[in-house]
Amino acid sequence: MHILVIGRQGQVARSLIERAETRGGIVLTALGRPELDLSRPDRLDDLLRRHGPDVVINPAAYTAVDRAETDSAAAFAVNRDGARAVAEAAGRLGVPVIHLSTDYVFDGAGEGAYREDDPVGPRSVYGRSKLAGEQAVAEANAKHLIIRTAWVYSPFGANFARTMLRLGRERPSLGVVDDQWGSPTYAPDLADALLALAPRLAGPAWCDDFAGIYHLAGAPAMTWCAFAREIFAVSARHGGPAVPVQAIGTADYPTAAVRPANSRLDCSRIEHRFGLRLPEVRDALERCVPRILAANPANTTIGATR
Ligand SMILES: NC(=O)c1ccc[n+]([C@@H]2O[C@H](COP(=O)([O-])OP(=O)(O)OC[C@H]3O[C@@H](n4cnc5c(N)ncnc54)[C@H](OP(=O)(O)O)[C@@H]3O)[C@@H](O)[C@H]2O)c1
Image (cartoon, rainbow, N blue to C red; front, top):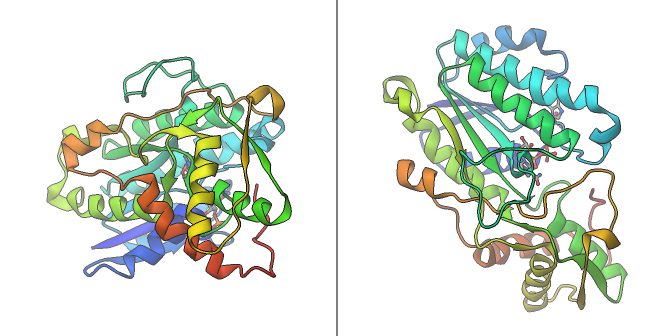
């Protein structure tokens, strides 16, 4: 089973690479910049033909949510046009594409958890570019699964867990937004689920009614403030920083891009169809936080994050 991943350095790409090494029967190739730049996807056909994958997973995206507000062309170039190019190239080989998308396609005004067929209404350039990417992927390759995930964190790259642990070393207390709800998702758990999914889509296993959108994120949903407190509770147990976290409002923490106040994802569709459910946030933090702390002993700085 050969899986081709688009991107190499991202949280999900790195998690896929790492988790694939623990599973038998999977050969995984990750293609990232400069070899493959989705804003100039002219080499895609050639690369895909050369590697001959059974499934393509595309977690690559322009993910700088605030920067996208003033860099719309670049966000759409990668998140819509690049996504379409990947799906088309896979389609020309008759290969399914698993495309990663986001909870930020929703406006956040709804109550409760969003289902896949709930109306979308992105409030940011990033969200609009990702929604356009979903539509482009669905048009470009009949064999597509669009996986919307949310609030991704991991030992790698720029993410909320690393930011909190860094700030927890630098400041005596923190104020964190307590009126935005979402579903924190541990990238290695997401990667495990994607790697379990891929063989079920490849070759003759593909079934046309698999195609469509699925939500896949951690549970339970919580606010950023509650998530920060969970992170520090785990950190304290492992000898890391633990500071009091005060609840603040979105209005107290202005950002260039508007985030949905509620982007909880109902993940029952993928559970019913494929039996996939991600582990609970507390369980995931028990695996994530010690890795971040171990990689950043007390006298060093936890990497700058967005
Ligand atoms: N992070 C979140 O909180 C979050 C939440 C919801 C949904 N998602 C979605 O989940 C997916 C994975 O997110 P992530 O957290 O892993 O993102 P990330 O850590 O920001 O990584 C982004 C990835 O995109 C690749 N990339 C960016 N521009 C590219 C370009 N022009 N050409 C080729 N590759 C390019 C990067 O490739 P290089 O390896 O070349 O650097 C990197 O691998 C994305 O589709 C994102 O929209 C993320």
